[in-house]
Length: 486
Image 1 (tube, rainbow, N blue to C red):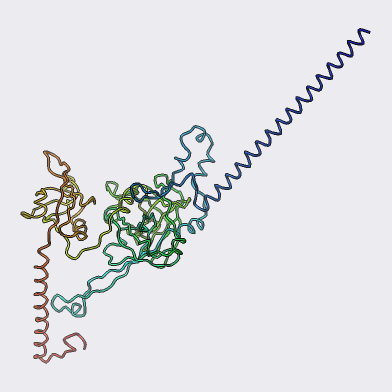
Image 2 (cartoon, helix red, strand yellow):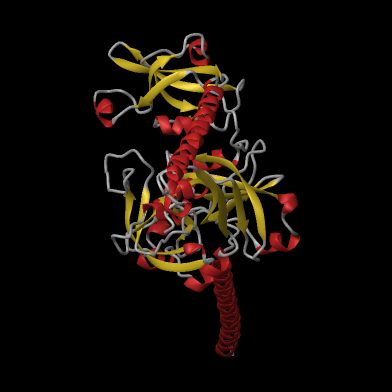
């Protein structure tokens, strides 16, 4: 009997253990199902994130990558995007992801997608200027000839790089607007607006023009956008790029190629010069033609990495164009964006000096690059400010001065009486030290004398031509024969 009870107790204990084991099994299966659901949710989240990333790549918008174009102390800034290197961070996990991760960071947008977005921030620029040309009398060699004024039209491109409370700001090449009397901008919707020079840097061939926001229609504002600025430092040799601009003045066109070389530097004649201290250039085989100047060079993420310059192109070569590396000039562009616009004034101020450009030979002997002051007008503006002979002028109102021509060009925007900061290099022992002075610009007294002399020369020339014709008439020379019409 005891044996039977013992057996019954053992059976009850076994049944209890079996139930516990089944219960534990159900819990484990439930845990596994829960884990499976969690993994699926993670995968679904990853797919959703990937889909969002794909849409972001195509539309050019990414909340994490874009740094908004904000204003600090009312200062306009470029809308720069963070590089992939910055986004990845320095964590070891990102480094161990393998080579597939690096391939994804190079950008894989279709050229047509890039062009569609870029057309919203690349504009066409048209300029008009007046040039002096010889008229009929000059062609036939009478005296020094007469000149007449003729309107000349030019074309180029620009990139919308920002806006402030009252202006839309557009970057271009300086040579596009150099000497222009009027500048007009054509936006993506075909509307044309008058623009004015905001600031420029002739040495770097950069300029910023502005269009008043009050002049721009709502439809145009809906059709345009501010360009995202990428990193030209992150470009690699062989990486694909896209160039967009107003080629030959026919309207916006698209070309594509690769980065052929980086950190190119050219001299004034467009020849390679590794010792030049000019701005760094990106060499590309994407076609860059006249009219492309000031347009955008884009990476495959649709970001601006360069400003095209057809001035550096040549008809003697093929597949060799240049663009100004954007990362090297972003600070310059922001300075130009925040300058006060100036117009050429008829009677500009003067410094009261005579000078010359410091030659390359002079620089070899340690004379700083700039304008060498040969003489200073007694009691003139420069003398009053403390500028002396043998000083070298290197900056004028914060702008780099490399030649006497550049200094003369700057002066034409400043009126007599304006106070301007001038940076000098002054001899100090065996070297030079920097000195900054404030000059109150003076009147150009020589202009009245020149105008008077020109007037007298013109009167004498007209009288000479009349006398020549009269003498010819006395010799029975006919009117038609005298003027070459026989």
